[in-house]
Image 1 (cartoon, rainbow, N blue to C red):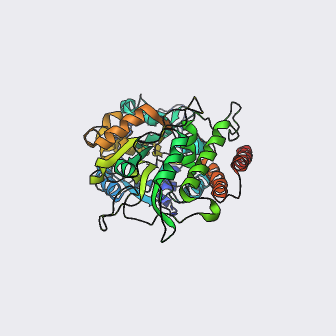
Image 2 (cartoon, rainbow, N blue to C red):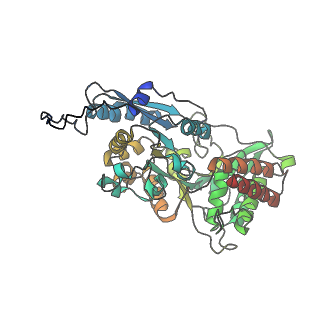
Image 3 (cartoon, one colour):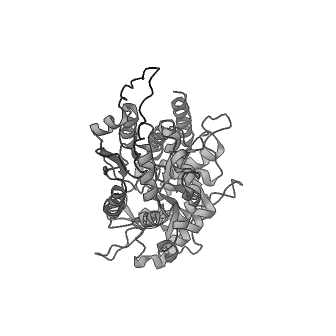
Length: 461
């Protein structure tokens, strides 16, 4: 689920795609009624894995923010194997980023042309579902029995019950804590398990450097170290209280007790860490690697005691610091909200096929190749994430104590980050309102009222 880089790329579709999507049939001459047409031999049909002679196609794939190792593997192994199986077809991968994704994807759909396969996030099945192709004829169980091997992440790749693509991985958000730094600060009870403990923890474990009036040690870095008010962090806390994003009538639920408690918790943690807005201290200095790791060059810790994020933001699994890192869910606030539950908010990036693509069957064949048991395993190995296919969770998953623990927590406490209506608009609305929370321009109640009002209006448009 998962820190992202920011850039905006556009994709130009080759004329060959347009030509392949259209074409007229030749006129047929009807024989006179007293004449029988000479028998003709039926033309040979190309094999399902062959393109007709002379036909050339480009299958375009648009991917977002993957490791160089992942892209290299796709280009050096998957694409050549696909092109060998389908002579005359060329695969082109364009690398984009999550910056401006809504503008980029909306441009594709508005124009009715673009890549044949696009990289979407967990919540985008609802946002773009009507513009995505029904891939059941190509990827459903009747067409591809392998689909039975995919776990819960498969739901993120569906719209109205129909497959629109395939999920790549499961990337839940965990709470990673440095047990050695906890003990050094006199905190001996492990990861906090309710709101009061977290606020107390933040006050006791945070360290301010008087020389610079900035943080030297931050008790908790929740997704965004600086603001501590990221909308995805808000959702994780909200879901841990048993909160529901929508009411029974489908309207937003930001005026609920769970929503108000969530916003207040984010504010309390911010103040316990940085102090009141008028006297807020500076943020942690930038270090090398994960904020809970140690800088090899200086031998100093990067400053965070706990990190609420996906494995992407944690140290690499071969780092020695792991002997001092615990992995836990976020536990909610059971004393005040009986419906609280441990939660890891699961993000599932997936690849979808737009309805406008003239190459849906070819796209499905590429997906089958790139999402075989072995390929889904390798794809995730390049990123250190949990494969979406259950049968691909072997080798590096079971051999890594960290991934094994993460997989167990995801199976037990995973809550999907999906089904969010107008997700891009909601994130903008929430970030704006939460920004005014940490500067204390708005109170907790005013922040939630602002989100409730603006999101309700956005859903009516």
